[in-house]
Length: 143
Image (cartoon, rainbow, N blue to C red; front, side, top):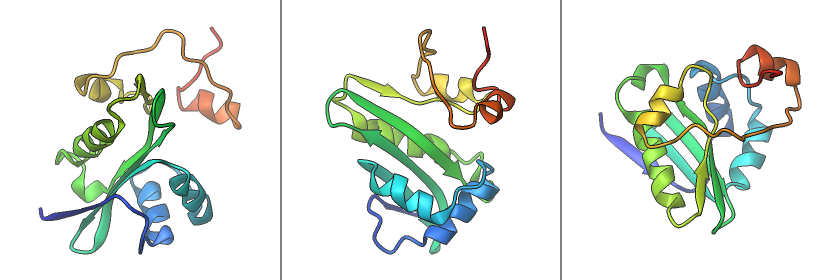
């Protein structure tokens, strides 16, 4: 697998990125929304194989205190190849020097991130725009 890694948004097809998230499957993300969130993220990873987008991820970071890794997606054809791990590793590398690097995982994927050095937080809290959906996905409980 010959991969091309890009860390800028030049020539990114936002519709292709939206399709990647849908088939990964990480849900429906509108191209215009992805353009906003990726543009406002300090670090980006876009991975192509033969010109086709097969992986993506980003980190929202402030340059010193906190970097939040999010939206890591891998095309189903490339899942299980180590690409997701490589994207997370690259975003962690970019985030080095921050006092904390945070992510929250899709329910059930915590062991994957634990292998990459992430620790479970005891005090993480969140307010979700769609609380019911977050509850259904196993991201929150009422305890």
